[in-house]
Image (tube, rainbow, N blue to C red; front, side, top):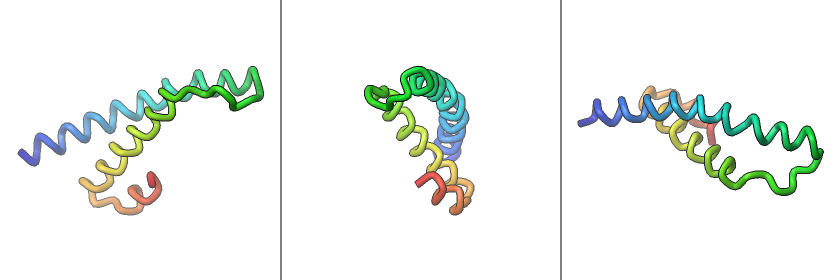
Length: 72
């Protein structure tokens, strides 16, 4: 059972790093064009927080506590 959890977290961590890049691009384009942070996407904010959760779990599984602190 524990191996399945580790595999799931590893898969989600890798996927979240890819999604992180995809979520980041539209926000940067909007900021570059408007020079105004008002109206940034709530979906992006939720996505970034979800990525942080999987990053912390990844650090915990690998006992990389410095990485966990950087994600917090």
